[in-house]
Length: 223
Image (cartoon, rainbow, N blue to C red; front, side, top):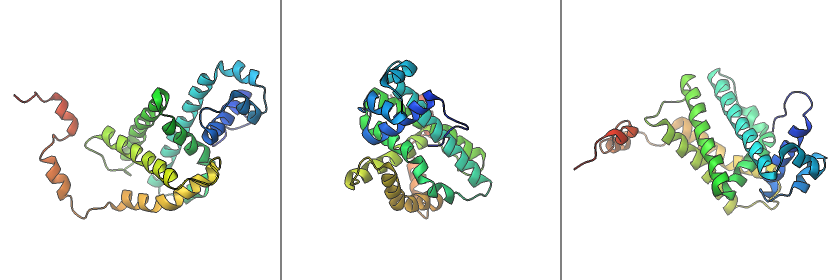
């Protein structure tokens, strides 16, 4: 993950160590292991965060903020004609973030669900940014599209790692590189070129649903 300018505070160092430890070992990782990674005592972790749950919540906020920033930067770079290959080369930098997202997905429960729902809400925001920048086509239902894209990406990641588990589960960077090597070409091709050569399927579908779809909520029920 990207570091803030200047030397991190003790609180930031603990938080960043926790993100990496959670990414490697899951949210069952102990406060003691996080403290060791951060070079502090377990008591100091509790002093700064109060509990592991509060530390977890702050890690969520940090990872979500990193994802938002990364997505918006990518949109700005593409809209201005810059290349983004440097982001592939920097995959290791984003490995803890991706590992953390994977653990949140695996963990499930109210906390994991809230985290994923926030990812979807953020995706609506940076998709809007892309539309305004002229990079992304608008959708009839922006929220539904953002949900589909986020869940599709996370589902692909989960299945890839389930079917082809890494030899070392703690090697987050290796997992990211493996995922990118098999997924990025088809993903970019799908997003940029599409699949069908005709929109006939969409036109036929729209005969049976309101346009835009969210208008269905305001239509009176049929007798």
